[in-house]
Amino acid sequence: MFGRRTEGQAAAPRKSAAAPAPAVPRQEGSAAAPAATAAAAPPKPLPPKQTAPKPAVQARAGDHRSENYYQIKTTIFNALIDTIDLTQLAQLDAESAREEIRDIVNEILSIKNVVMSISEQEALLQDICNDVLGYGPLEPLLARDDIADIMVNGCERTFIEVNGKVELTNVRFRDNSQLMNICQRIVSQVGRRVDESSPICDARLPDGSRVNVIVPPLAIDGPALTIRKFRRDKLMMNDLVQYNSISQEGAEVLGIIGKVRCNVLISGGTGSGKTTLLNCLTGFIDTDERVITCEDAAELQLQQPHVVRLETRPPNLEGQGQVTMTELVRNCLRMRPERIIVGEVRGPEAFDLLQAMNTGHDGSMGTLHANSPREALSRLESMITMGGYALPSKTIREMICGSIDVVIQAARLRDGSRRITHITEVLGTEGDVIITQDLFVYEIEGEDETGRIIGKHKSTGIARPSFWDRARYYNQHQALAAALDRAQG
Ligand SMILES: Nc1ncnc2c1ncn2[C@@H]1O[C@H](COP(=O)(O)OP(=O)(O)OP(=O)(O)O)[C@@H](O)[C@H]1O
Ligand SMILES: [Mg+2]
Image (cartoon, rainbow, N blue to C red; front, side, top):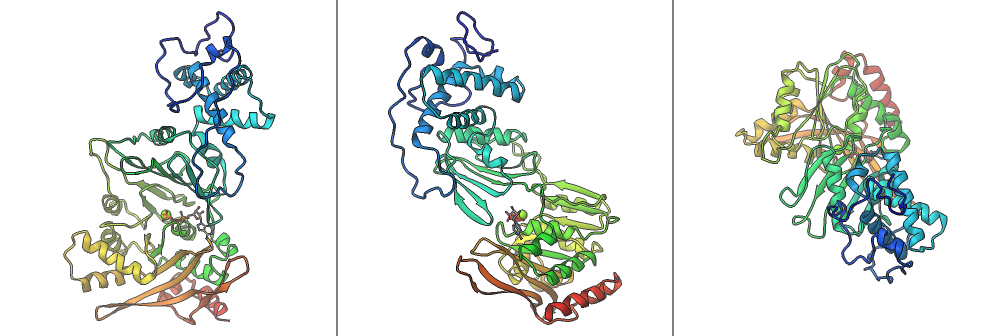
């Protein structure tokens, strides 16, 4: 028990005078006195209120914590750190550790004569437990299911994306070293390290969230942490229809594209919903197909029983052991795949994916960053060229046409909504030019009084797409004709 400070009893996890410096860094210039001395001394007044620089952007929702609250928290936190031994605390299970912290904090509060409402006190206890045991101020954000992204720009500002909109939160870190500590804690879970000598780190957390950390000296204003939160209830095609991301008919056509093993490229900007869409499409894969997925950070959640999931590996600290996407895709081919799914195509693996698509692995899919279907195809071409394949561009284009059947474009519109803006077929080449044909496009018609974009998914009137024969082969042609008919009506 190290919560109670009984006279003459040196509680176990408490620090001795010679205890090492606290593992959690202290704020510079803190006025906190160690609780042990505070116990004997008369209650100290709280340090005078400092005027912290105000963020230029004001937090929108729930900015209820005052400057005073943060001052008190720092004081109590520092007193706590001076009192307990973090290494011993780490040996307790989470519940007992929380109890111990709770006891000591309550004691420090009464010693220091801090006047707080019960709810403020609860919030303080919660915050301090999070600081010591978890991810500090990030905890409440990590616990929320409605957040898509968490973006921490140094200790002062944290933004989140909710419902497609980015907003500033009231989350603040004591200083950049606390933030740095939390970044370390996050990436060390997955056996990675981030510091001045290796200032960039990409990782996937055990819960599936994707994390990127970049720290000084590369990040000038303090560590920048970006988390794409894992969504437990992945969106399905029906959800996309409900959110108007695609029309009902468009969704049916997408389902057929997935079922009849078209080779698909999903294109879109950052956070436009590419991975979500890829995940939805994989829902139409038959349960008896052998699927191999290759990703940088495993995000896809295939429901089929016959799936092998592969993940690339960054180099270790000595710069060794890297396994690239190209190597994974190549290895895939020796694993007797029926479909290969590449989470994100960014480099020379584009060539191997196209080869795979071309050589009997119909129904393979991948995503890439581009702003239109045309741009997606030319990006694919430049990835191959930059990968060092000395092929004439005509050959590369023919290869692209021979491999990719459909490009689906995803976009995040300016009101934060996500839409599938194009379902486009790749028809072939004419001379040097790749010929494409849109099946569905999203047309923006205006915006309502709240700034939400109004638009419609429109069929371009194509009744027999080029994958018609394929649809017939898989006995999906009637469903395809019906969906396209209805879309025109
Ligand atoms: N149609 C949609 N409607 C609403 N939210 C969506 C939709 N599609 C995706 N999202 C949400 O948007 C966020 C980003 O989606 P996703 O990870 O699929 O994007 P991405 O394009 O793959 O991003 P990145 O470029 O970072 O890989 C996720 O939280 C996801 O749940
Ligand atoms: Mg993605």
